[in-house]
Amino acid sequence: MLGVATNLLLILSLLSLTLVVVNAVFNVSHISYDEGYSPLFADFNIKKSDDGRGANLHLNRYAGSGFISSKYYDYGFFSAKIKLPGDYTAGVVVAFYTSNADVWEKKHDELDIEFLGNLKGKQWRFQTNMYGNGSTSRGREERYRLWFDPTKDFHQYNILWTCNNIIFYVDNVPIREITRNEEMGGDYPSKPMSLYATIWDASSWATAGGKYSVKYEFEPFVSEFTDLVLDGCPVDPIEQVAGSTNAVDCSEKKDEIENKDYSQITPEGRKSMKWFRERYMYYSYCYDTLRYPVPPPECVVVASEQERFKETGRLKFGSIPRRQRRRRGRGRKRVNHVAQGSDSFEANM
Image 1 (spheres, rainbow, N blue to C red):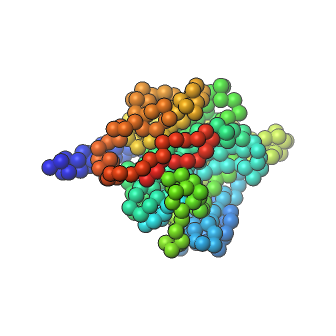
Image 2: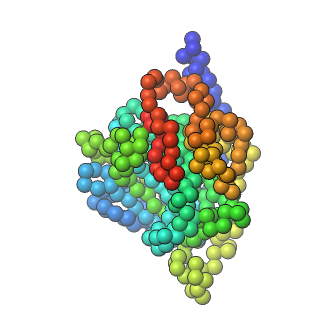
Image 3: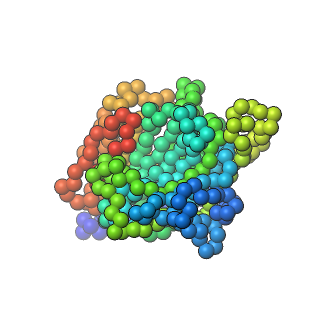
């Protein structure tokens, strides 16, 4: 009976979320792979889809792979539907992110969604992060689980970036918002960026802090991308930042994006975000008081979130819903330390 009741609660929870976000369907235009992207590296491991709407990225013993938008954008909305590789994926990272590191190597901006592979039968996890003006020593990681299996079907992942706010979405559910304020200074990304998608071997850190590596007997690891969206103002990054007379006037496009439905979180969206963060977020730098005794200026401390975390920013024992604990079983180790500025992760989550 307990198992039936637990399953019923899960179904009701997911149904509740579905009802909340049923109207959160954004009006966006998709482009083909060839319209907006080009190979970043290892083009022999990039397989364009038969319909031309996307591409599959392969990781094998020879190389990973990646593609990049053909243009830089001065703010924008970036989206793709992604299906992650299944089976054993420990050590594998799939990333969907914006960056300008190839132009400003030491002063770059970046917005990340990174998916972290795991042992067979264990859940993929993912993190979001933000860097502005080379602020890599001040990591702003949040780490999460998903409420679905990302290997079974395509799911949509979005990054909104305006001069006022940043929102990360999963299946149009807002999972994180960063609102710009003056105290952030240059830590807020403000220079034109490209959109990247990659898959690569991160055996040194991705799973249990590097305990488990990629096993190439399971190759190829394939991440599929489709329904690609690049909605922003394309620019020459150097001319734009320098204020050249040849710089593009992006004011009209910026206003257009800031007035789109995806640029503001509705009351229903707030409920969905609360639902997600209180159930699936397992680390937040904003609650890591060992790392940041004073939370960074963009942090908004939410009491219902904060009470779930220890001073390390990780979950307290017993703060994980019972059905999630039962699924993971017993006797599994955790890494309970996040070194400042490092990419170590909770093990076997």
